Length: 421
Ligand code: AMP
Ligand code: GLY
Image (cartoon, rainbow, N blue to C red; front, side, top):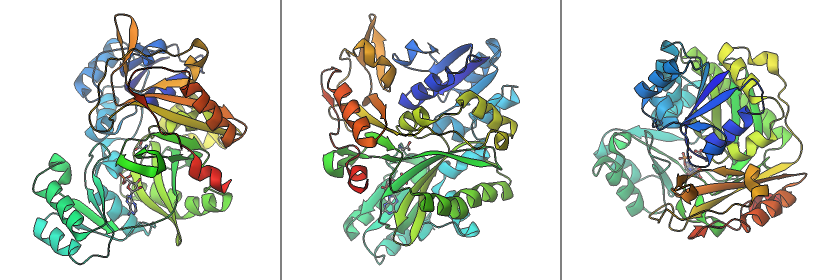
């Protein structure tokens, strides 16, 4: 089977490694991939949002199956275009990817179908948005409606911050068209849980729960990033919480999407907060999370390619129950100093041979035959062990043996989880 994976980060590296466990995966191309993914797949210089070029490539190379991993191509309709060209895909069509592409859509969906989430209002008029934040309880959460590279959410502690966030999005157009509409919502508290679930539109199969660490620095300080590290499973996700999520959130969401004529096929990411009133949805993503995938897939005991094909065929039920491996996994992101703001790149990376299989490469390129840094998040260094404490120790021991100039990482990944174990 000839497979193409669209995307070029650590998540795609983890997906490709897992797909390769199945001998049916005869050849894998990554579009565009990166310098580290090149060890595991053939990288092709076609951007993740260049849909016409992806379709042309798939036709030329007789691709049997395409996995569309990032949010942008999914929201832009890469799956629709590839399927129309006769290429079977893993991933939602654009009319279902809107669950991530528009926060106003997802909030309205949850309201209509009684799925627990923060109370909210939607605005397209700057005066009305300003009037609302002038009297809303603080802190208040201001969210750009559309995709904003994970930067479209402001938790405003003061009226001034809330007003600035509204003006930045609606008047200064900081997020372009993504900020023309705003969702302003109630601030919730509690531990966060990510659940990545495979779904064919009818059956929903959650994989291991996980926990991301979005702030750049230790102690959850500093600017928000795409994610500085993850652990799985998430100890706050007890069997009782899992059962409640299935009944009140996962199944109702899948059924709501089907009832709206937008059946969701692919990986649906539930960003949850365990509030004093029970689990609530903070956000949906229409795809595998990054860097959650780097800990969730190593703990998946079932074959990923088989599952993805079953999702596409609408036959996920036949693959249940999913096999989840015992034990825990940890991923520590090694980033470029200065990320997520400005940082230098081009530094050579040294990874000891015995660690290569545990490193997922996010932002690196090959230059004159040498792997060099090329992004903010550079490597996801992972470990799997019988318990979380050991997994974290092993991940950090590996981090300490990997070198590149200007490297930095958080030293406290998993601390909050260890406290409750
Ligand atoms: P999002 O891009 O929607 O995932 O939001 C980014 C982060 O902002 C989330 O992971 C939460 O930590 C935080 N956040 C979003 N919405 C809320 C909310 N209503 N209450 C508290 N924190 C929130
Ligand atoms: N790690 C969060 C995300 O993938 O959006």
